[in-house]
Amino acid sequence: MPRTAHNEISPLLGYHGSSSSSPTTLGRLTNHLKAPVNPHHADLLLLLCYTITGLLDSSAVFIWGSFVSMQTGNTVYLGLGVSGLDESGKSQRWLKSLISISSFCVGSFVFALLHHTRFFFVRNPRQRGALFFSFTLQMICVAVAATIVTLEKQSKTDPLSWKIAVPLALVAFQSSGQAVTSRVVGYSSLTSVVLTSIYCDLFSYPALAVTGGGGGGGKLVDEWRRLGAVLALFAGILLGGAWAKSEVGLQGALWTAVVLKGAIAGAWLVWRGEGQGEDEDNV
Image 1: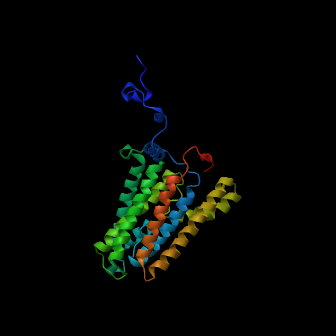
Image 2: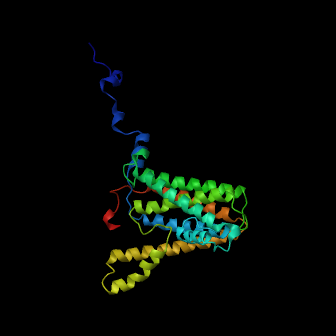
Image 3: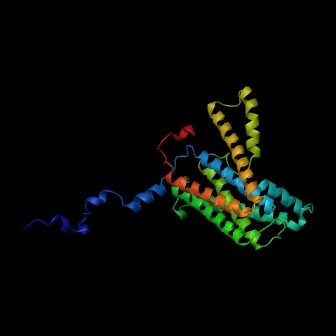
């Protein structure tokens, strides 16, 4: 009896052909998204997040009267409003601040859940797919807010309505994703939403170094990161202020943030995986 031809062997008998040894395109993509990223140099992306924060906060506080990222200022506005000391009562600044704070808190929970639950098929907080999806979601939130602001022209004198409340809530919600990411990739000090602690660490370092409490070269790298955070935020504020006082207005700042968020999401897709490149201990 002649031997069965190679191409007649049934896959049911356990033979899958020579192509079975190489993963499919979908399999490679799935493995790529599941792989944890190497956090080395991820601080560069977080510094870009500071620019986005400055861009959005400066234009938002100029037009809406409240911050969308830095919730310390919003807490002050809220306290003044509750105390009856908010002189800008017509703008309802304290209500806008309450919306921003609430949305930021909800966003913090949602984005942390995204990185730490198997419900989203996440087994490692630094999983590339989780980071990509996080910034894609942030980009979508800002894009929806930008669309509303573009279609519904706004000014500083507009009373609080859905056309302010909804984009304000969306932008505050997504801004928490940057802070969560800083924890995920191991740069907890680069939250992108606060500078007070960074100013303290930046200017206390020389005294600590003299007294022997400043650490070695690794601490010096931290100082450069802190300085970069201040400069990146300031650059974003200048850009946001330029947009806010231009004819384009707030929507220009929002659409710019959409582009930057998309760029960061794309960067996570090509970021080297864990174990590739330089050792994580050098972070």
